[in-house]
Every structure is written in structure tokens, then in C-alpha cells.
Amino acid sequence: MTTDILIVGSGCSGLYCALHLPKDKKVLIITKSDSKSSDSYLAQGGICVLRDEDDFESFFEDTMKAGHYENDKESVSIMINSSRDVIEDLVDYGVDFSRNEDGSFNYTKEGAHSRSRILFHKDITGKEITSKLMARVKERENISILEHTTLLDIVEKDGECVGAVVELSDGKTHLIGAEYTVLACGGLGGLYKHSTNFRHLTGDALAISAKHGVELKNMNYIQIHPTTFYSEEKEDRSFLISESVRGEGAKLYNKDMEQFVNELLPRDVVTNAIEKQMEKDGAEFVWEDLRTIPEDELLEHFPNIVQHCKEKNYDVTKECIPVVPAQHYFMGGIKVDYESKTSMAGLYAIGETACNGVHGRNRLASNSLLESLVFAKRAAADMTKKPRTVCELPKVDLSVYDDREALKKEYRKIVLDEIKKGEREDMKNV
Image 1: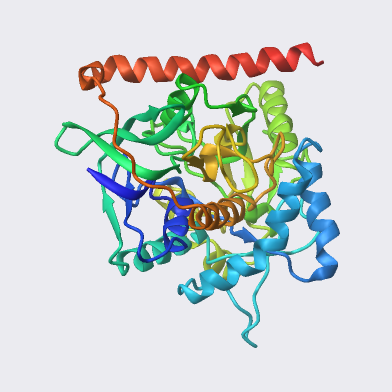
Image 2: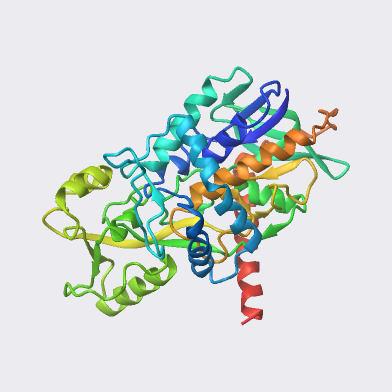
């Protein structure tokens, strides 16, 4: 099997990258689960955008401060300066952002933002954006999607990536030759007991990259979201209570219903405060009060959250809800340059799988969708400028992939070892 461009992952970065590749290029998107089971669909809050030229300095500072000033400044500047073009693209694709009565954008604010600069669609912004991108992808004759197709390895020839080894939905192993391979595989939440991520997102691309000597970066930079719905029931995935509710005025209380933290501080700071309060209270959760938000706004802006809480027998208009931190986002990943190129020729990485330094040690709320799209578009532009030929694939012993369970364990161990390695390096620098 051959294609011009192979994209591994059907989240917003993979789809957006595909849409910006030339229509005469054959593009194949593969995804480990069904095409909608990506974390991009789960994003609630929104997507940041530079409101005007006067907003640049504060947007830049907010991003840097949240990232503990470990961010790559050039990456941050690129993201911010590209944001309005991305929003124009999304609107052209049919994305319906909330607007005021006069038709202007209705901006909201979240924790650690000094200004309202976030565009949203109710509390399902990720679903709105990703579903519209998917609709446009399905209109393109040059783009095809293979669901339930798992990346097992990349194929290397003379130190360059020339394709991938995949398991198709029928369980058979196949080789795919490609001019370029793009890793857009999401994060690694499936490795954690409590995570807002889909369980099948286990960092396979990170392990495969490490195995081939592709450079990784900040592997221990893992963000915990401060507020997910606490449930005594065993759940496959933690339900996120968006940071937007705190941006709109929701409060956090201890067991005595006393406020204990400034809710608009960066996520890692709020998370630490919650964890300390839980330990002090001897409790497994803290309370979040959404009653501070006008009821009509609650129902209009956060219908999904309101409904989920109702299903769990909580009426957010009348009572507080229990919340607890959970693994949420991965700031590290496969090291890439400003065009999303990895250290291996022929291989790109975008979205949560990649690390271009935008987020630093901690991601600013609602920068994830923006960063993913900005650098996906740059990857597409770079591949377009530098076409390669699909070369003949080397001989690959496919029998080494027969034991899928052993492979899963191997990849899990590689990723966890890389995270521990990053933690040790951090300790040396303290």
C-alpha cells in the first residue's frame, strides 16, 4: 500500500493538515479507533485568538507565565500571530462560534488569561471544530480515512522515514509507503488511572519515535486538570468541568463550603491548591459552585456540563458539585521545529504528540486547539514546498509484530521510562 502523505490520527491537527495539502496529493489518514474518538472532540472551553494588535503583549505574557517561562518564545509568537488566519479558516469551514447580537464574536475568559480572547461554541467547542473539519475532509476526493487501524511502527531506510507498519481493522499487518508520514496521535492519558483522555491514547508514537532515535522533549511535562467530576463509580474517562465555568465566575470550596483558592490562577497552581485542600480535609474531592453564574448563561454556554451533572443527580443551578483533579494534557512529546519537522527526515509530528515549546511546563487554557492547528498548517506548507518521491520500501520482518500484547507492554514501558528520565533530569537541575 502506498500514499503520498500518511497522517496518523484523526483529531483536529491531522484533519486540518490534510485540508492544507495540495489536492493532487493522495492523503491517507489512519486512526486507532473510530474517526470521532479523538480528544479534539472532547475539548470544551474554546480556542484562543489574538483580538487585536494591542492584545499581543498580554497574550504572549499570559502564555509565558502559565508555562513558567520555559516556553519557546518564537513558537509562542508564531502561534499568536497565526491565530486570526486560523479562525478565518475555521469560519470558512463552517465552524459556528458564539456571537453577539450585532454579529461580532462573543469572547470569553478562562483562568490565567488577563483578557477575554477565547472563542467558543457552547461547551463543546472541540466537537464543533473537529466535526466541521471532518465534514470538509470527507468532501475531498484525494483524502481517505481508515478507521480501527493502529500504528505499530515506522519504516526507516537510510535514516529516513519512508512509511509505517500498521494493523488494519481485520487484524492483519501491512506496510504503507509514504512520501511523508505525519504523527498526529494525541496524548498519553490512556496510561493513567484517572484521565480526561480516551483510553486508547497511550503514547504509541512516542515509544516508536524513541525506539528509532527520534528526539523527544519534556516528556515529564504532564498537565493535571484541576476540575473533573468526582464519581464513586468506576468510569472509563474522567468528565471535564471546563475551566470556562471558573472564567465565568464559578467558585471552589472546601468541605466547610469556604473558598480556598483564586480560581483564575494557572491550572497547575489551582491543582496544587485542590490537592492540598483535599489532604487537609481528608476528602476525595472539593466542591465547585456554578450557582454564581446566571442560570440562563449556564444553560446556554454549558449545556453539556449541566446535562452530565443532572445525569449524576446534581442540579448545578441549586447545589455544588464534587470535583477532583485528573490527568488532562501532555506538553512534552516528539521534538519538532517551527515547521513541525522531527529529527528524522520524512517524519513530522503535530498536535499533542509534538513538542514545539509553545506551552512550556504548563499549558494556558484554550491554547491547545490553536497550537495544534497553527503548526499543522505549517507542516502542510513545508511538505508542499519540499516534495519527495515514495521510495521502495525495505524488507521488513512483519512477524516481530505478531504478539500485540507484548508490543503494547514494550511501548508502555518505553514511554513511562522516558517520563521518569525527564523527572530525573529535572531533579538534577533543582
